[in-house]
Length: 264
Length: 264
DNA sequence: CAGAATACAATCATAAACATTCATATGTCA
DNA sequence: TGACATATGAATGTTTATGATTGTATTCTG
Image 1 (cartoon, chains in turn cyan, red, green, orange):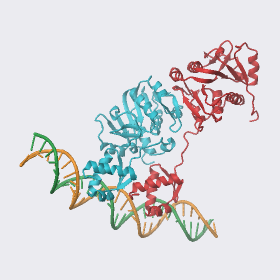
Image 2 (cartoon, rainbow over the protein chains, first blue to last red):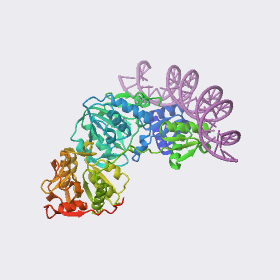
Image 3 (tube, each protein chain N blue to C red):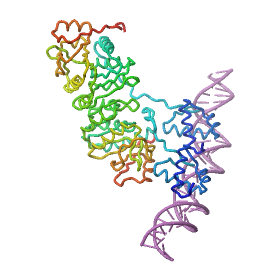
Image 4 (cartoon, chains in turn purple, yellow, red, cyan):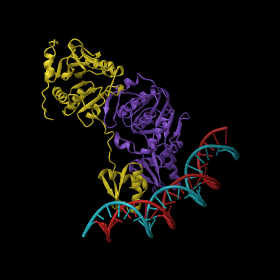
């Protein structure tokens, strides 16, 4: 193993992916450098979103290989998701037509928007939106059609795009499984990526990405769009910290969701 | 296995998901750390919503069902509708692609088809179909998109037709509000009529109309198609009697639903 | 239902890991 | 050569993780 930084970092990355996790001390011993150097290497890799930095070492980024279980995901970081949803909903204005894709975070977004009592049209491929909007008199709900996917409670694919191609929204609120400077927005489902991309392409106003900190830096299987097609990222405090370490387009606004109900 | 906290917590999570539940004492022994540390790990995981903390350990997080409060409206003639649904479902064959429109009778049809355990593709604008098919491994469900109509739990209109125009089914099962020799099939909603018409036009096989006796002879506001585009009417005994008094196309087959479960 | 056993929360002390700053070395380019 | 960027390591306080201790809450058991 050569000792130039790039090579060492590459080897470290390989090791992490192989082992799942590593410690600073072992790496320092193995590469015959100081722990400080190893830490800088790990920070560097983390900044690129390739590994997850932890106390004492680093772990592999979990590249979600399978479609995540919707219900299980719904229970992760519930407070952060609710806070993010509330925050992004505050940007919604009377008369807006919104594209909102599927996912547990955007599910919360729909809930927040529906409770706004503003006249809004929501275009989504999340079937559960029906249950959030059925009480609301203010929401006009347009569902994308297509093949139903049980795991995510959504429809997606080319049939969905048929409908999206007919509608131009003036805002899009997009949930993702991965947010990365190099890989852009990514999801584990090809059809979801296609539908989300169509939504973004048919948005004439701002494109908001909503993502809790556990999505920041993650790369999933299929790319939706690159970050320069995104206008704003709404995330939690921790997510904002991580993003500030990254090299992101200057035009990308970072919005931190203030957890108004922190003491729940 | 490295000894950093993140790695240990990851392994604990894997164990919990694998075993269903764990105890603090066993984990402490297994990872060679104090029970206190294990407790803190579990609290950490619980805070993220990944596990459920219990006294003495932790369990896998229960997948709480989303929105259990779906109530199918108490429909009229429930027994007749169920019988009609069972009857028409018996005509469904392995590999069929079915158009099924929205309505309380066709809702029962979807339920009956889903319990057939046959490999079938259902194309429908009834959003509630999701809740009937989500347990079934055999059903491929394609939802039409479009503007959601709360009263009927369905989508319809020109956006829905976009998708229907792309799909040819080999059977259609159509519920109606009015069945009349002179006026044909009629419904009270213009968009529903349009979507149903598109379904029928894109069916290459048999078109079944399902209608209990209270719909026979009725004329509603908007015409879908005339009776000569229908191949079979599935109705109850009383409905069959009424139809026999009418002048209907010779090609139209009358199928009487035998109420097999009259004492339900 | 009472008492024992266990699990827990709260606090503190210690050690490891960390961030930060500075200094040194190594190379590159003008 | 000198100015500069990069890589590394040492020294510094700070943060985090852990375990021991104590007293409280919960569960089990007779």
